[in-house]
View 1 (cartoon, rainbow, N blue to C red):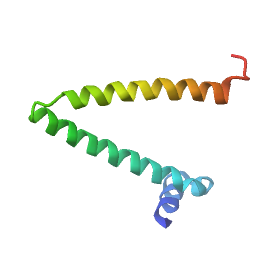
View 2: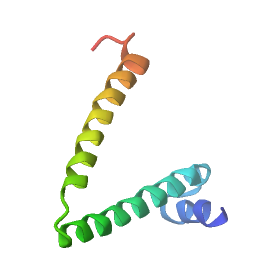
View 3: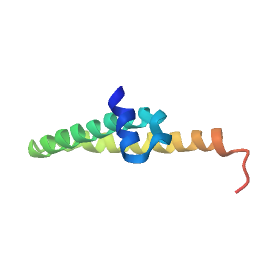
View 4: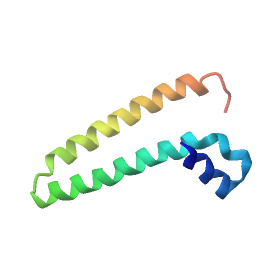
Length: 80
């Protein structure tokens, strides 16, 4: 807990001390990305690539659905 705020203060100054949750979230996302790379490499070594195809298709579908929802939720009332 303390390290997140101290790290931001050290790198960016006192104004960013309250944003320690960003460091925590980035740590989770980065660790998941690393584990994904290991799983993908092991599946390629075993020559089982269908799970990668399915995960990319599901990820693309979720990205489209979430982009549509977020656009309606946060930018529907704004004029571009």
